[in-house]
Length: 86
Length: 119
Length: 202
Image (cartoon, each protein chain N blue to C red):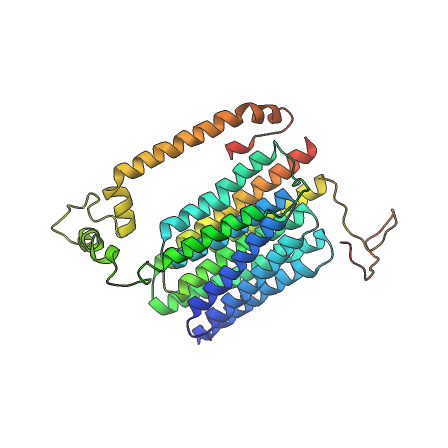
């Protein structure tokens, strides 16, 4: 039970709570927020898993995720905004 | 000695990541849920990835590429997480979502606090 | 608890199952799109854990990024609420169960995971490995088309040995993308009237 594992379990627990909020979320924005937080958790978790399993290839995927997550959030928000306003 | 510092940084970051998600789940209102999402998550990833890169430096003694990638991820998240949070709050405000003020009356002010949820 | 990677794998797969079930059961289609994004993120970690880095890249870029945007583009033309109706289809459930049972039965013929005596391991894999991995760092031989620049065997196989295959796959996907853009173009144009941009540009 080293520090990486404890941190990874904490991050997975946080991801689970964010998933609960994404399922519950009364409004759309709660869901967008939860998905965004989940993406951040995923990036951190990938870096941690790469260290635990000693695979540096995970970091490339983590970089890709960090980019895709932002893009997806902005696309979702654009959809929500233009559908409500226009 | 530095290894313990790295461990402490990572566990502290894990704590922040978990407590931020707990806040997202437990806080009563969308605008209040923005706070753990924006601040606690950013700090959590900064601490975790910082501790991780410190560990990588200590372990393999100069795996510069991995450390560079970790720092790049951390900087990227440091910019994009608050930006996304801001964008979400902006769109929410533009679409007419009112912040919960703890009062049901029209002229609600922010000083009142009551123990009911708004869901 | 002995193997931390296994423990994390199990937890992540449970999360993925939860996200998929929630995406199935929710009536809010926008929420379902977001839950599918979460599901894709989780699945891509699993691909990475199984050493399938190329699949993981694809899952991250397509599953979490592009398909979310495509589904949102579809949602601009439909409503975001699922039509209320019978949510339980016995025929569909029976079909899924039978197909799943047949597939699970078929896995009993497969060799054990990581079996060194499996046909795929003894037949062609050594040839590829000696031709790709062995050449990396070798100074005298560059029969590998990429010389010493491809340290990953999967990438070498995909881009070199299956080069034509990959090229025509790319052509097919490009054609499909062009068709989607052509189909959605007038619709997006009518939506662009009052908004700043369109989704398929993203």
